[in-house]
Length: 49
Image 1 (tube, rainbow, N blue to C red):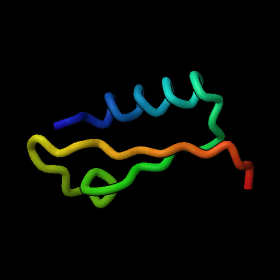
Image 2: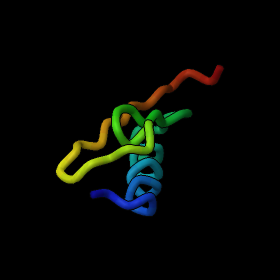
Image 3: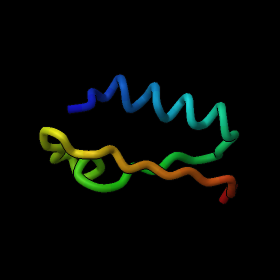
Image 4: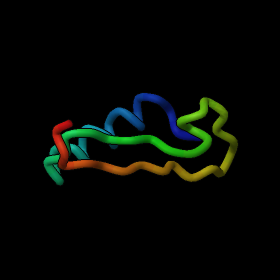
């Protein structure tokens, strides 16, 4: 399972590396029901609105 601290670090790293405006979390982690061996699904956006 991935901790909230790890998710925050990943989002910060992605944001800085790709200069994204927003980071989105999908799937079981977004719904608050992550399970063991579940993947973390994220996406980023360059749009400002």
